[in-house]
Length: 75
Image (cartoon, rainbow, N blue to C red; front, top):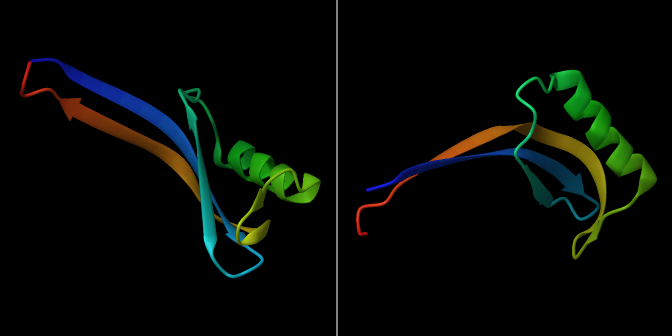
């Protein structure tokens, strides 16, 4: 059996149509700060670089580090 763990930075935005849109970035630095995450999210919104089926990104909803573990039970 092998155990694996992955870590991602998940950013969740509000869209023009009132829905949410999330994106993930693999292997974030362990030292990433709240201020850095908020600045990145605000930059993505202000530059309007992402357009979703629910419209442009308009608000910061959530952002954080997600760690997932997986235990292989069937070799």
